[in-house]
Image 1 (cartoon, rainbow, N blue to C red):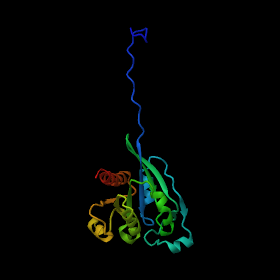
Image 2: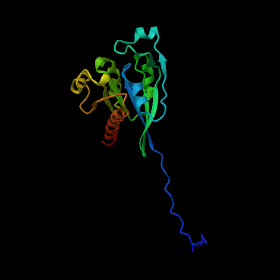
Image 3: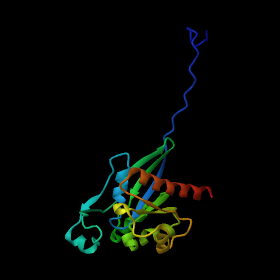
Image 4: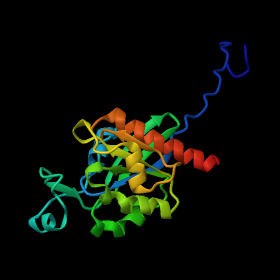
Length: 200
């Protein structure tokens, strides 16, 4: 018998406290209508927070809808979702608005981010130059994800890399913003790039 237990039972071993997963902020950026909101919605394990507003006639006159004729709403602030990678790591996803007139919000959205995923529509590469420049100038690790609209892309990865003039160290991948697994794989590329940067 033990002094603390008259019945002679062996005290249970102490249980180590379960640590919550490390929170990591990730930004999903790109031009108007490239699939940012779709990507956040496809991957988020919670109901994503979106700030979608109807595209008015005035906005339609400003934003190029020629490649997205069925688009009726647009992000005016940000999208938000989250994804638990494993018991030790949880991504908090912030999607930026794509229009240049909302660019003033980017500094606040990107603050504290470990990395970024720049989504590209190869039918209009010029729409993503601003996002690429933003991450390059702030030296935030990022990857370029070419969204396969209708299951295909207009240009090869090498052509996209050349057109965007991104360094060889910047990953360029093809993905489908509608597919959860495809979005996850693209985010893992960003995560690996960011971790390699911190370890290097």
